[in-house]
Image (cartoon, rainbow, N blue to C red; front, top):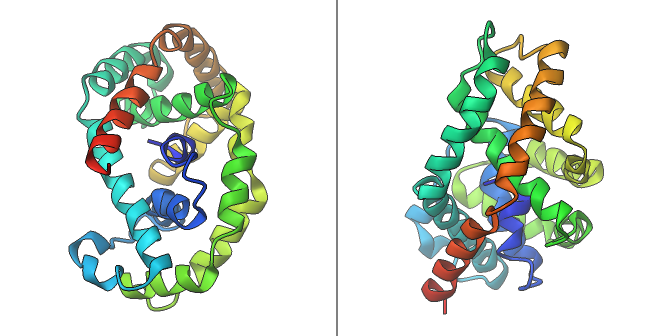
Length: 228
């Protein structure tokens, strides 16, 4: 799931440190996809300090949420449906349809949450702006990242840019998907293909809008029972 979808499960807790933890795995990967850290393997490192423990709790909830999502019937069905819409888009490009449908579904879910006012991006960014930076640095140190300065710069820029709100515009969703594809395939999709992608996403979104909330309900039920 993408940033706002993870925030959906934390929004009522109003806990900046936990919200940070819930998106930290993806933030780290977005900055450097070669980063591999596994704090869940050594929980005792993070549970002695209250702020570290909250970041760690968010991290664990992120892992649980992604595990349920990626193994759900919803994910399997929706990515297959979306892939059928996107195969003409990726034709004659290096981009894999399975990859694009996976990422596109996640961004479309963020977009649905914004469109239907289940959350607002300002609440997300405001919480992240309130986190304790020293606790974040210490958490990263404990995971094995000796110099977190590059990540702090990236994190500050992420908050300043506030680009997630732009997903209300489908052309921005298509732009974001092309940028993600370029990390793996430098040529990306190209301008004509981005227009085609926007049209395909608009067509598919009509279908997705009918029952997208079911996956959020499924994951919410699990998290409530697990962490009651």
